[in-house]
Length: 257
Length: 246
Image (cartoon, rainbow over all chains, first blue to last red; front, side):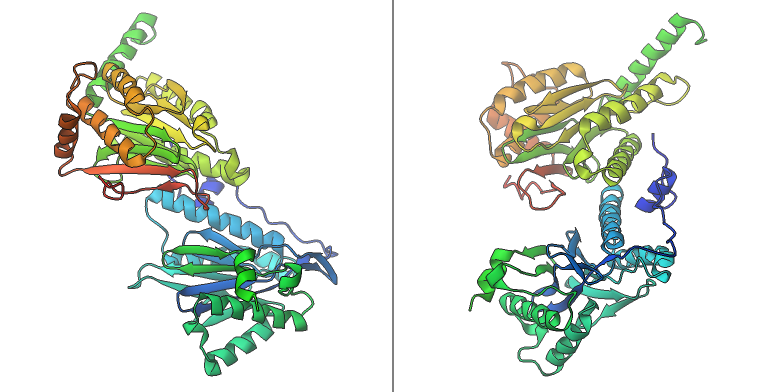
């Protein structure tokens, strides 16, 4: 009825078996201006991990849209924050979504956190030609629940463009506005009251919105947060029990003076 | 031998007899469309009867575990390839069964020098509303019946299956709660497993209830629930019998 894939439960192997492997396009010397983004970040708060991003996409000095969702729910225990070229990043997200669900359904168990982290690293490595030519660079963040820990705990990982993966102790940020975010998070981790890791959800959401607002002051490619114009961040929370999206309405309520 | 048509027919008839004999002791699986979702139920050893296929799709079956596994894997592969190359919304049970599983089962059944699949299956697709819920009853020879809404069961013998299906249609009338529905499906499971009549002579409700409770001791009630209202794309859940309050 069905041959088993070379690697059991591996969706990329299944695609290759059906000759549907992802194609890599060689970049032309004179490439078009790419759509880019972004500021995304994640930090531990009292209940788990909060992952947030602005909604702006730019091409050169052109603002393409202010309605991009850069924080993507991969499955019920994983979040991806994309920074870089959306065409590549969103395709990576789609591959991960299908791969994780395919593994869980076919093997009747969820993929472990280390395997999920490496799956993203593998996609980044396969994207190396595009990265080296400077037209398909993606520098994502990943958050996943480690069910091997007792009790289960949400963890944050960041990557370099070549696919090296690193676990973040307290926070991670990526994208053009990440320098500002990292500075503030570093300060808050050392001197803040309360520390991000002790914030409750409303405080963490408020803090995340202020981080993005500050980043947008220094980086034109980062869209800020402005409740007066109904411009909010994309904020998702990962707890051991699953993913929660903090909607615009919830953010508006939390940010109400 | 098989170059003569009547010999071929005889060989096919022998295969039907063989498959029927092999499936005789199989434990039935059942499913019902309810306002909040689709409930699938079987009694087995855990992860052996009821399975998630895709976001809105599930499978329940009886037969040889290795054969159920092959078909389950084929369905999952086809659904994920379809979802990835087109979109998750394009995965449909009609295409999965009609163009994928059914022809493969038929081809395998008619290749009389290879072993036939020892399976009887039911597949479910969750719709936006109960009227759009879809069931496929797929047989070991690739033949199938499609049904919209209601309840479906797969048993090893056609007569008890037909009687059970008729009884379920009446018994589930007006039932909206999944605990109540699970109880009724388990009553039907017990009646078919124990060869009880499902006509006017059916045992009393208390006897049926006591019967299934006794019969499931030492076994696992496998439940699949395709939730109609769910923020996530993957609608399948696997509640336990105690989650249903039974």
